[in-house]
Image (cartoon, rainbow over all chains, first blue to last red; front, top):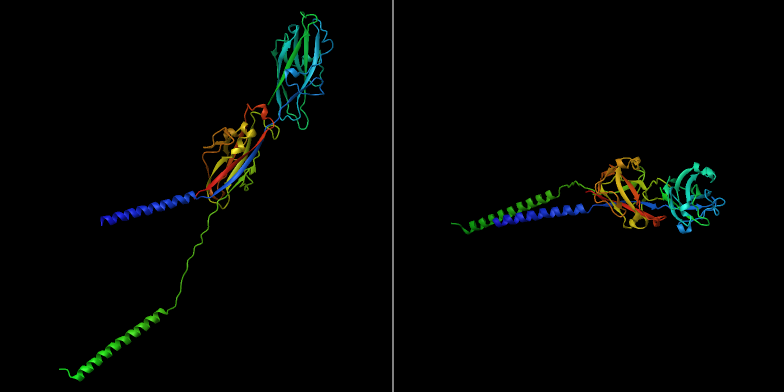
Length: 198
Length: 210
């Protein structure tokens, strides 16, 4: 009789286990439904270009391909205390999708007279002349020689409005011959206008 | 002493009794047959078993819901702070996607999954975070700080990483979950990333709750 009771209990437990098993299977057999969503992300373009006449722009993106700016008369025949002026324009090209902050720096100063040329670079209005009045602009960079530099302000360029290129910023480079200018000696200064997207 | 006659009469009597009993039994049998031929009437009960439905819908504006059951699904309205369609390093863009069950539908849970291909192209320069907001207007740079952080959705994940937990969806559109996506372009993205793009797809995988 004890054996029969035990068997019944075992059977009851097995039956209970079976019920639990079915319950678990039902839970796993849930329905599924999905929603999908997407986003397309595109990186913008960013390119600064320069001009020595305010009209024709081109790439000068290494020191070796720097644009030769056009100084006012006698830049090739300087005497002590002479001051010469050269304009330069930078703008963001039409493909650029963002604005920029531009930092001006001295890349290099070479030649026998590099120590005898001081300079200052100003940001000036589009219609302003690049002459002695340029000192009324915003000082971007200055140096007591072509191997020295003192940082000034940065300037910003707004993002271009498609399909046009961005509005150009005119800068004026002022170079002054020092008292120790060596006769017949040359000097070459290279400046960098580095734009950072913002 | 029984005479032969008496003996014969006794046999006849017994025989008669037996026949009477048999006749009586026959009558009883007829009576039983008559009882079987009574009228019949039945009542029937029935039950119709119908499977429930489970269906979720999504919206990019928190209001206009529709079905997007296949990839790539609904196009999210990422709002670019600068020129439309282009990101620059460090840019953050925001977009909303809302899900709820339809009416009628069973309740369920929903889990965010990311497509494996999201990390190619510009995707390698992007990370994303997802929070929940109560209104569509809450999904913006200004309101990101007050959006609700969701367990299982860690911040600043690669576009290929999904959520590790799910959220509850009530039956019959009883609640609406507004997911706010924040996608950030790597501030140190190289110049070579310029002009590249990537389609990122997310799946909101819902499972019915029995």
